[in-house]
Amino acid sequence: MNKSIPLLFFFLIGCTFPSEYGNVFDQKSTQGLFLSTFLNSSQFTCSTDSNGKSFGNVDQILLQCNRELANLDSDYLATANLNVFSNIHFEKIGSDRLLVSFDPLINDGRYELVLSGIVSYVGETLLEDKIPIVIDTQVPTVALVGYIPITDYTFFSARYWDFTVSEPLENFGPPILSGSLASSVVLRSVQKISGNLYRVYFETNFSTNGPGNLTLAFSNSKDDALNVVSNTLTVQLIGLVPGPSLLQGRSEFEAFLNDHGDVIAIYGSKSSAEILRHGTSSFVLTNPSLPQIARGERGVMLDGKNILITGGILPASNIALTPSYIFDSETAAFTPTGNMNGPRHLHNAVKLQDGKVIVLGGIRDYTPVTPAYFTSLNTAEIYDPTTGTFTEITNRMRTPRSFSCSVLLSDGRVFIIGGTDGIFAPKDTTEFYDPTTQTFSWGPTLPVPVGALKCKTLVDGNVLIYGAQLSNLNNSTMLFDVTRNQIFAIANSKYRREWSVASELPDGGILFHGGAYRYDTSEPSRTMEKLDYAKSNSFFDMGMSKYSISKHSGVKFPDGTLFFLGGEIGGIHHLETEYYGLAH
Image (cartoon, rainbow, N blue to C red; front, side, top):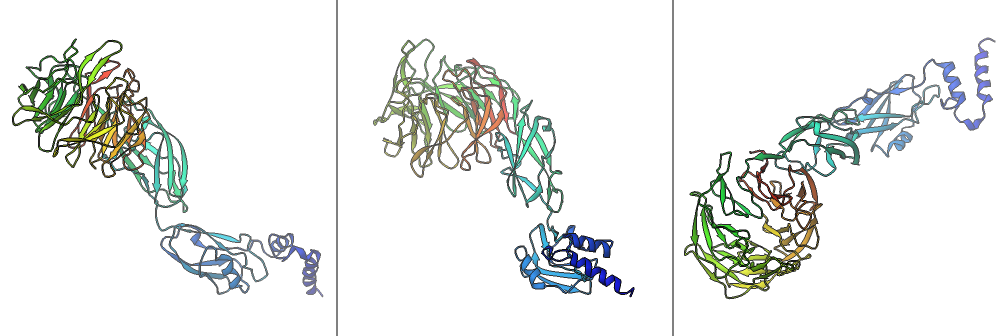
């Protein structure tokens, strides 16, 4: 009689609950919770030590359960897991273990094994019907997008840095900063761009433009297995380093680098030259000097030693000059050479492939009254350094041009760009000079009329057109694509950069230093910019220069270091110089 009481008790409890509650042993039901408590002090579970970190490829998992298992519906379990695993198979091992086999997992991550169909010998189902399986075959690393130590300058992006990670991360926190410039960088927020790309927004407050370093540690960043990123990043920030001061103020002038590595600053409202000899720390003023020339002379390096100086205009004079001079940068001597056939200043001078020099256009006379008046020229002449003579070219330029720019192309032609024949009338035309036929022909049309501009031939043979003072208040930086014979606006700089200096960087980008952003050049921009040329073709802020400079000059040393010198600050001559790079 006593033995039948428990059986009757269970039967009565089972009949007490409606059938719609399903399995009375389901721990999610009231009956199941009651029975589980009555029959066992602990709940039915199955666990695996692979919930921690599993290194290497995983193709099977052994589950240990705290109850004996009922017969398994292997097909049901396999179907329930097919959306995560392929070819999965369940097998009961002994009375309380379960072996799960599947195709090897080769990707790191957190997987969920569905166990909702597993039942104990008394009919209990698992309370946790999914078990996380963490597979971790790699420790994550982080890289700064597009950064190449020392030679790449894109690190100074305008508002953020982009980081790429070797695997998707569970968490990417702001990096911990150290290094000489850590105090100058403030991190603001982190944005997830994709599973492997994160953008860190920041602000900078550099008190110095000298070179420094920044180390970034990522201890706040972890993968799905909670592994901390294993690497740190140390980046070199290349800034401006003060150089020796000029002895005389110069603006709208040219600086040259001879074969010995000497820097020659010459003319620019001063009838003199001064030289910074390679390996020395101060400029030396040459003596004797040029005859007095107010401005508008143009020079070109002939042979790595001698510089040809042509034209210009005297103070308080309305007629340009015809005399020309050779400056020997080794002996620091000026020697007169042949006179040009006609007076000119603010012209172009380009060295040809045969060593001769072509002199193009310019202004013959100038009357500085209101309205100002000058006569632009459509003539050109050739200087032969072997005879020291100028010969006027019979054929004329297609249009008179002053305040224009000209460069030598790789095929030997000269490309002549823009200019004006009236102070406020910039041109949108270009032309070519072919030295084999000594003829001029029209070139492609500029998208924006430009005058008082700068141009330079890039390493890839294309021509950069920039720094226009007369450009209808336009910030366009243009490119002449030699292959397509087409000019297009490659990008708009963030600031007006009239009279700026553009220099190619080792990573292929182009650094813009100084330049005015008003017509009178009284308010030039201190912010340096980089054109990410041939990549994104976007402009990026590169930090602040020490001064607001315009009408200055610059040279590039063989090791890639840039050197900026002279110019004006608010119309006043500037004597200081700056290196941009780590070599000096």
